[in-house]
Length: 428
Image 1: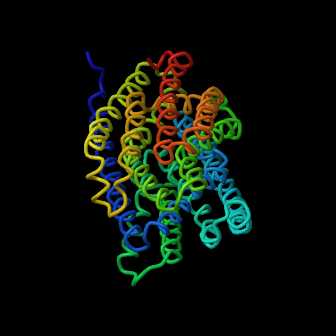
Image 2: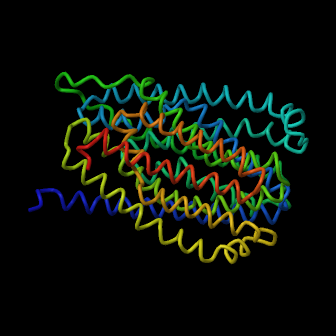
Image 3: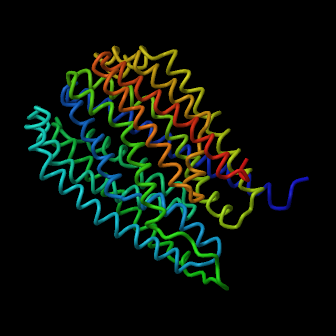
């Protein structure tokens, strides 16, 4: 027999998921349109440089956040679950302040040292002005993702996704559509401005909801783990995960032509479009997992974990199978010259299918305080990816980079599922 209030909870979750997927659908359309317009406007070579800037801004933004954004998604809902609004507000301030400091530091190093590295280390002078501008993109990325995670921890799912990932491609695409004959510098500047616009929007929404932190703890609550103690292992996890996505592009850039980088990057971005589904589900599930674990509500935690996994698999696997079947046609739609990425796209989709089948196990570990264990598994993933990068990428080019990504991501999903069952058995 179903308990009272269970149906409204399920209905509410379904509504939130529908709104979140709608927002992610907007992101998919925006990114597809942006990537196609960039490729058509700039050509394969300069489009490859733009994709390198996006790849590094993801890595640099992760470094700048110090893992604070993922720690916030565990701490803020857990503090609010026991009515300690003051503690939750302290977490918000520390996360935003730490992200601003870290983003300025990493972004500044990127702008100052990047051009020299492009000349001396990579031997690509055309990359130098790109890295100079990428420093601003690093700071914007760091702040946008942190603000989005804070909103997610407050159950502001749609606002979180618009702030963190979904709105900036739409804004950039619109600006480029109106911009006469944009060059690479114009595209980068408009991307940076769009990213900062979403930062401002996210901060405004957090400020508007500040009354959420006015709740007062009626009694002594169990002390939570310190924020940095949660954040540092999760920083390592984020760095590994971003590296697994961006490292193939950066390594391929050292061994292949910009054209090869461009069609592999397009295949990679197509394959990870289903991540928007997984992230949408995880964004909804994460604060609930943190609350339920803090309150030791094992029944509801089991429901949340199982619903998150099966929702992810049922929504992500069908489009991935479609990409495998229609890979040459899909890449051909995006423009001439992308068809050679069909084999890489198929390999990448196989890895993403395994990842979707065991989704949200990393979210469960992160929100229940098992970041150290999750980091150890991610380091194994990184070691495997490094071994494949040293062998497969130089030998097989774009297909080797795809193989490296698929094997490391698929094996990581399996290992995380095994670890979650051992560390949080009450959730299964």
